[in-house]
Length: 336
Ligand code: 3EB
Image (tube, rainbow, N blue to C red; front, side, top):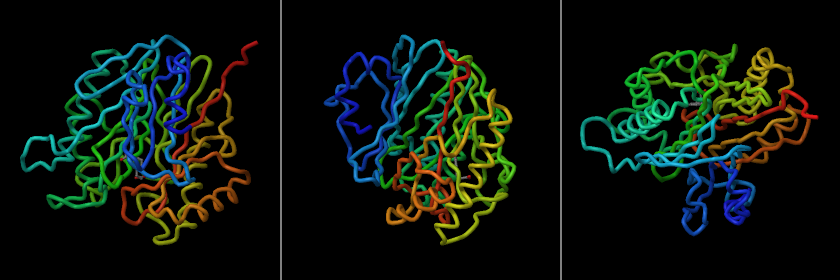
């Protein structure tokens, strides 16, 4: 749904919104949209289907409360909490440590402390967006600076940096602050890895001094519903990028990776029903002009029209042209 349609929904519907992630190339004024109590992550990145904006909205069936802690805004019920944080790099203390690394460490320290304070110990999914992700400063690529700060915060907060980790994505925007959304809860989720890929938390040092801190997917099994979050997935086999400069082959390899993760998820799900034909995709393209090619290749491989939002964003390795993530859910029990 567009940001405008979102803001124009009736109050009763808005009272059920945990939070949202809105993508748009245009900065909008939240207050004028009348959604001030709802945590909305604004990501400054173009939507490619002609819409001015696209929002992913998380709904709850229970009573929601909201709060603010430092730079974090959040909304929660008994089961889950959705939060957002935006941190400007310019606001960080001057030091030898790159500002993005400081912002990442600060953001994740705030997030992890909030989870401890409010007792939502389990992270399911987080979304990371930062400006100029492939840029270099202080002798290090900015995505690698981000990885340093993120991992440092996890360690400082007594969390593991391997194994039971949330699903994630990390994308580059043209400008804007470091923005992070997160979905956490009180029921543990199952972390899923991809047998075709080395776990990202075990990537060798050639990809940076600290590995990324995420799992390939996480599966949340609640009594009534199961939710699958597949991390941003790209044309990587083992730890190496495949098919440099070939966007169609990269799309094909990415779908093979997504299918492998779906197979793993179905082994752990109560019903083996996750299927590429019936999930929601978000597709990040380095070059907007590639959209028709990528969509066509996805529909050819999947054999059905796809439900997908296409966005222009920079991928965290310079040789990656496309990254795809999935959200899926199914009911576990038929309610009479
Ligand atoms: C990859 O497979 C592609 O740093 O949080 C995908 C998902 C990627 C999440 C992250 C990075 C992240 O390594 C990049």
